Length: 449
Image 1 (cartoon, rainbow, N blue to C red):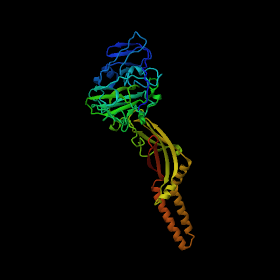
Image 2 (image 1 turned 120 degrees about the horizontal axis):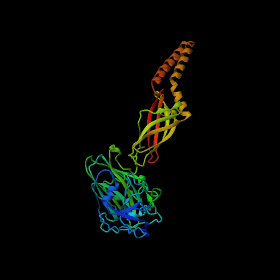
Image 3 (image 1 turned 45 degrees about the vertical axis):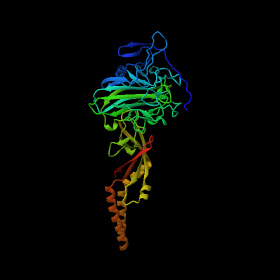
């Protein structure tokens, strides 16, 4: 049974006036978000790199405008437009959209309560078992790129008290076809084609990974928690028109508000592999980086080893943070596996932080022990030749039988020295690791004599 929860309707006193194309626009200082039901104005506030051809909301809610003669803000509507910076929005232009399960006008209120919210009591929701479903549809003109994208941030008053407690409010983004349901037992969201989050992830109160909420991300708003500012992406066909469906709803009850800020709806041209939203594991089981050179660069006096790498994530808030450790294994002919492992020595360590979709350098600092091993390996051919020369000299004064053995050994050493001289001094192995998902990769490079 769901725990008993208090209900609080929080309002902040601001002055607003009506203007053409927008139901409500704030004029008082500090009023960042104004509730309003003009969906075309909402679409124009968020669409940047695309053409808006239409906008609508699935349910016509009985929105109320503010009475400017009172000190209280009576504006009431689940959607609204932000026109003052708040929680990292807008991300493009001067406005952004607000979609909530309650009242958008609450978004910029001071966070003086843990239970701010408004329940619409929607009884005819097509999503069985949810409360206060709101769906906005934005119709877009012909795609000018291969990737549809928009920026968003998910907020909720359910955080942190009601995480995994039966109030898994959620946000869904779908393209061209709307279909949303929920599992009545687990509250898992069933939304084919949802691209707000990546594979294995959802945008909801209970989410983890890049979609996990924190109090810090909600600073400045009335909400108790929020995600990072995320980017949703979906491959589209260039030249085709598209309809973007944005859905938000309460689960458990309709009391506490959940919201999403969204902005900069656009078409992009990206490699297909980067036109994706961040998944539960955004690195998809890899370290997230790939080398851009066939061999690393050694710094002055071999004090550092540098390798250019690329972060393979799509442009956004999550980058690649990796560590690296290098070892050196001397080269040798027919060296037993155990002996080769025993000969391997630690050589260097380092790390790199690279922005998503960008390139950078993985730099490792070497240690004296490893450099000594490399120096010895490089000197091995000369050492063998020197030993062969001594044996040959010794053979000149030795008895015939012993001289034959010494000369034979000297000949083998000379041959081996030639083989070593033509071969690398050894193998540099760089193990790159990503602590966020435990993935690691070993990169191997020859070390020249």
